Length: 196
Image (cartoon, rainbow, N blue to C red; front, side):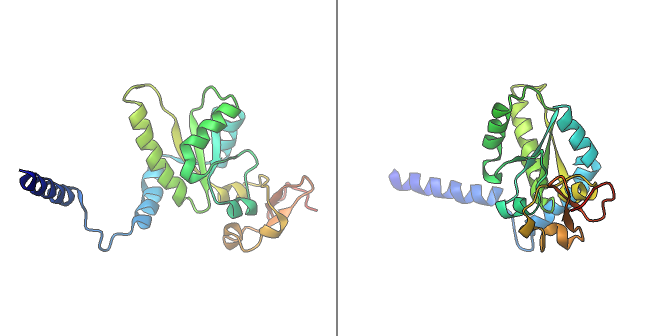
């Protein structure tokens, strides 16, 4: 009896694996996320403008969440962004909401270096919203990506460590940060800023 049961369980495991498996030969998951970012998010208007994100933060209807690594943040951080670790995304978001006594938000704006991690997080966020809506059908917070490059180009100030502004992602994108008299860094192309 035990032998038959073991065979049955093994057979079910093999069948289950073949039913849900996928041939990964030639698959590039990172490329798929980039494709999603360029196609689906753009089509759904989920790549936010800097103006939109800052207006939402000012109106207290949105949060900017920065989940880059520490060295990336040291090279350039949006002052109003909340630092979140990607591997503790939802737990740390809960902490931000509690600490800042936030009651209502419509949108979370996700910042990363190239946008790919933010795109991946929007995919996960959509799954989370779908799960929550099973019990709370009217609950919805939209996740959008926000480009650090666009932020720097919009001539808004960035917090940075002076020795970390060179050889960064922004520098590679031909955005050179320069210290201004207000203590923040701006693109050296900004004309509305007084540089030191």
